[in-house]
Length: 74
Image 1 (cartoon, one colour):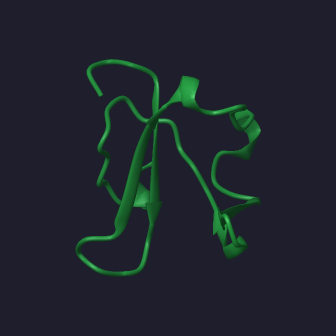
Image 2 (cartoon, one colour):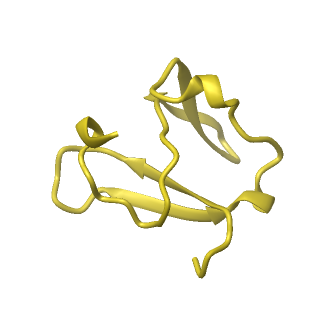
């Protein structure tokens, strides 16, 4: 993402190729506070038909995207 502040949303399904979305921070209407690192929030997938999926969320701050390092390294 060429050094720009960005997010990587990974839908971890245990496979070698989980679904991933990359977006720039300015594409979001708000960012999670620093004290939410590690979890404690819900990711909701919505379509025109309404809420479709809900997943427990967790995040970490890293230097570069994509970041495929294990969670235990952060």
